[in-house]
Image (cartoon, rainbow, N blue to C red; front, side, top):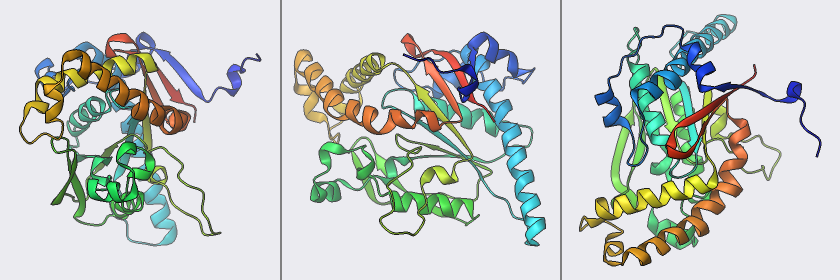
Length: 316
């Protein structure tokens, strides 16, 4: 098989030692106690890893934010239009159980501690899932998390409103406890300096238009995208680990959608968890999520133990 020429590789590749050097003295503003509060259920991260991986990343993002702001200012002057703040949008994508939420929360904490004290908001795409009743009507309950299970038009409109500088944009709230969108409950996003959007399918190019009219995709509004990558075997193990942790904690809540899983034997529960992974999460990963990896500006590749092993940055 012919090997790709390095000159055709769209990414610069870094070991963690090489990447950490790009921190360039960026000060660490989080403590291990902060990190412990921010990481996910089975997504351990040390202060050392945060310093080696996320500090260089936040330094890079500061340059991107500055460049986008300068570009917007130039365009405003050229068009002779009043200048207004345009939020910088960061997308965090990847498989179920890969640790997207941990990355998003750590970035939010670090970015909000910049000297300029920007307001950094975080939104997950879970709130844009169709409610269970609608998924049931569409026959999509077994495909929850697949692109068609989301109200993609509402999500794109949300991003367009944020980018246009609209005040007080509402986001639906999703409850993992009841496994559904909470009717009548919303979070309001009001002109942040930076918005982090975390979700499975945010880098997808979307469906082809059925007419000659151009259509917009979520990725059209993302200024910098991050894909969290890992081997599928590791992802399955991490999913099962998280599944059993939730079975001993959140699933025991009487209001939990998954309360009945706590009554299964351990063997039955593991079989159920692996069936969910292999029939839903793995096909979604292979068909919809993994193919978007090459569209990301930055890829954080994890090894066993959830620790980031290397970094790839798209060439400009």
